[in-house]
Every structure is written in structure tokens, then in C-alpha cells.
Amino acid sequence: MNNTDNIKECLEKLEVPLTEAHKINLNKVIADLKAMKVKNIDDYVEEFYNVFEFTSDERAKRYPMLMELYDNFMREIQSGDRNYRLMRKIRAELEQALETSCTKGQMQLIDCSQYITDIINDEFAEKAFIFGYVMCNEIKEETKNIFE
Image (cartoon, rainbow, N blue to C red; front, side, top):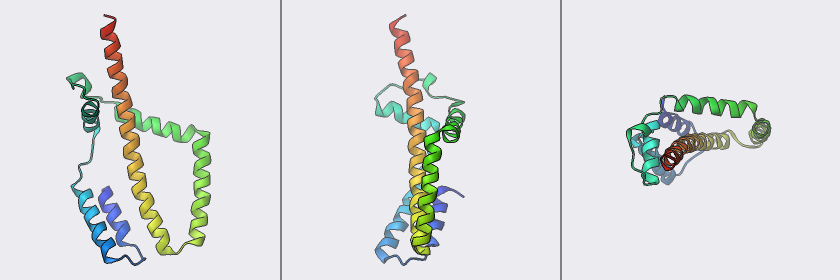
């Protein structure tokens, strides 16, 4: 199941009444999400070159181990960082407080909102990681050319 299906399923299971305007807007957003292209590493590299107005060449188009490196990097940060563990503990406490004070429908809205926030954050982190990697390679190439 892809992210669009997950979001649609989350929204369809809501037990809180939505206005017709909300339903129309949510259906439009879901249609836009379905039409949205899922980005891969090549898309982010190309976007980097477009954003920073670099001329792309073959050496910058393929990074075979980059996503594996990113996944390992994220796992390491999440498992080894004391601040991250503390924030997760605080978040769990807040979620427990919400569960005891919100209705089921309100919790469903919070869950849907959090799911979408997670997708946004994941894409942002992935893009930032790839941009950083490509930028590092570009700086390396520029400095190599200066000293040759």
C-alpha cells in the first residue's frame, strides 16, 4: 500500500463529521497526491543541480550506495542519540495524555495529521541528506580543479 492509499484510508476511517467543503478539499488533495511522482535519488540529484544552477554531468547522476548510507545514518542517529530517545519518551507521554483526553474521532484526526507530517519530514530529511552529499562532491571537485 502506498502513502496515498494510507492517507485515504486514514481519512475514510474518521469518525468525526467533516463538512462537505472539507471532504471536497481532502478528495482534491488525495487526487493531487496520487498524481504526484514519487521521487528517487536521481530526482533529488537533478533537483540539486536545478536549484543551484549547476551543470549536471555523468559523475553526479549515479550514487549507488547513497540511499543505503542514508538509511544506516538515520538508524544510527535514532538509536544512539540520547536527545532523540528523550524526545521519543516525551512524545509517548504526550500521546498517552492525548489518548486519555481526546475522543476517538479527535485521535483519528491527530493520527492522520501526524502521518502526513511524518511523510513530509521523511522527504525533507532524505532531500537534505542527498543535497548535502552532492554538495560535498561538488566542493571536492571544485577544490581539486583549483589545485591541479
